[in-house]
Image 1 (cartoon, one colour):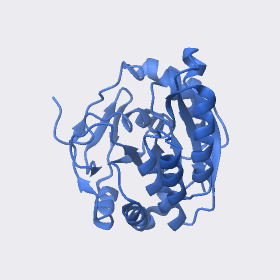
Image 2 (image 1 turned 90 degrees about the vertical axis):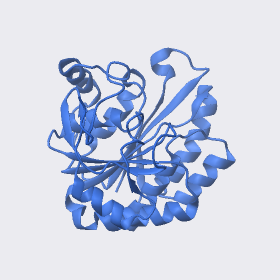
Image 3 (image 1 turned 30 degrees about the vertical axis):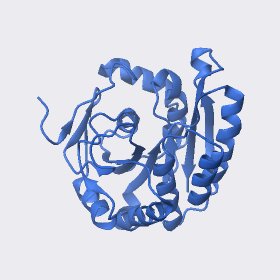
Image 4 (image 1 turned 180 degrees about the vertical axis):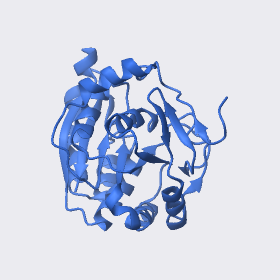
Length: 270
């Protein structure tokens, strides 16, 4: 029976294996040993692992996962607050329980006026859940701070991003920000790649306003555009100079259907 502060997995057995051994074996095929680096953060996708696992794995093969990972992801469901922080307790996956850092969560709530402590927004949402096993696989001791964000105007993006940077200032040596987002949804691969390239250029430039503009003007169905824009603002405030594209792929590589693909990108920010 779940307690109020324990989130149980909702897509285990669908998006990724539901048992510890199978999940570890699959993650090991995606997170291939590489030289890890200390980044301010990264961006990775959140689809079923058969589709997006190799791309997410490329980020976590390179990312040094410290003590705390602030997870920013989109809301695919209307439940709960529009801008929601899970304030404490733990998130369970087949790999065990990932502790939620209540101190960092409280700092975010204090510095970001839009954010609310709310569990309801997270319970039906998969966008952050599928990232947690990657974190646990790389650093089983890492704590998380899940933040779900709905649509917001540019002024709110700036305010929230600057608030994230301010909240994390005391934790800079032991925290990273990871954004969960897929790219273009259900278009032909060539069209999706052209559109996604425009968004990726704005991500690499740490250009939050430009990202929002290009996504709107080119009708790019990037579900995590608002979390990404908030993160870009935070990264700039934290002293980042650029983003780097690690991998771009699409679902057709697994399904064989290149007429209706979802795009996936992995980027690092430093």
